[in-house]
Image (cartoon, rainbow, N blue to C red; front, side, top):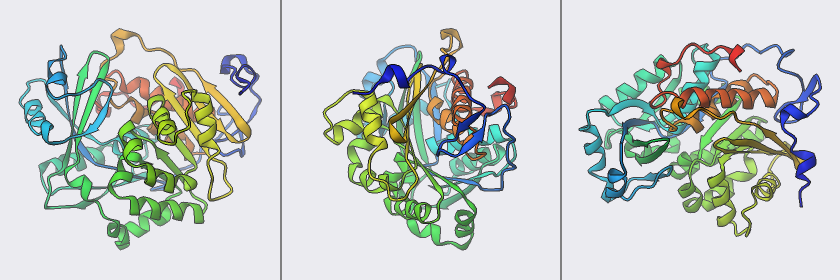
Amino acid sequence: MLNRSRQLLPLTQRSVPLWRRSAFGKRTLSSKNCKKMELPEGILIGFGNPLLDITTVIEDSMLLEKYGLEENAAIIADEKHESLFEELDNMDNAQYSAGGACQNSLRVFQWIVQTPYRCAFFGAVGKDKFAERIAKRAKADGVETHYQVKEEMPTGTCAVIVSGQNRSLVANLGAAALFTEDWMDEEENCCVVDRASYFYITGFFLAVSPNTVFRMAKLCSETNRTLILNLSAVFVLQMQKEQLDGIMPYVDIVIGNKEEVLAFSDTHLWNTKDIFAIGKKMQNLPKENGRPRMVMITDAYCPVLCFQENDKILEYPVPKVEKHMIVDTNGCGDAFVGGFLSQLVQRMPLDYCIRTGIFASRQIIGVLGVTLEKLPKFNEKCI
């Protein structure tokens, strides 16, 4: 049994020394006294599924019931969803934005670091106007894109149905599902990989190109670079258990929400719903290199939990957002990751990384979709 009362004091009740530990245990100055590093180009690369988000707000549950959708769930489209995208496209309030979880996180990352092209993104698109629209938005946001173009399929789309404070996601991967490992053999792409120090991979992408993921994971382990994995969705954990188990020994940071972590426990037959016990077990899973793993668990307005080596658990409070300020919860998790990574790559203290992630998610919740152009320029005084 964990001694939570001793290990889980809120930040406001803890004595915080000048010296803190960074995400991997190195001693660093507190954020007040820490000088941020000048980021090299492409220090972070991400692998995901580039999608065009089609977002609409509904007043009742009829559309969800028609297509058998659940609130706050993310699924892959099947035959019964074929007409959904056309139906959304014909709605007067439909909005379009560059999407895909990983690409969204990288766009938020760039919004915060402000210097263009500090990150690069890999994924597959079709040869069509949707791909052009996504690429234009990513470039405007400062993300360097390296799309593998698959002419035989259209660019992927994601239906984002917003109902009150909830959202339902239905992804039609299209060309994104055709990404192949050989794209990483291109000379230009090899150069992008060589210069990166941090690799961010979504569970969604693991389902598309596991060979690419394993290749990057082994590279990170062998060259002492940092690998971050987002569990992404419950269905990923249910359908990709073998692939997840294969990559986990290489993962330095695992990020997931409560539902995803519970699903991870279920697929591994751990027979527990105790989030603290699950986080501890995940942190202690076998590791390929000597760096200790960190597991981060989010749960809406509940504190962010961080599980570190030696059974250390940290809790970071999440300020509640007033109901009238909530426009769209889609992208909040992506924004949290983008904010977190923006400080991680600058070797800022863990608490500052997480507070920046929380801040970013609070900004995105106030706009429809991950529309950064509607947000003011990032100001770290707000953190």
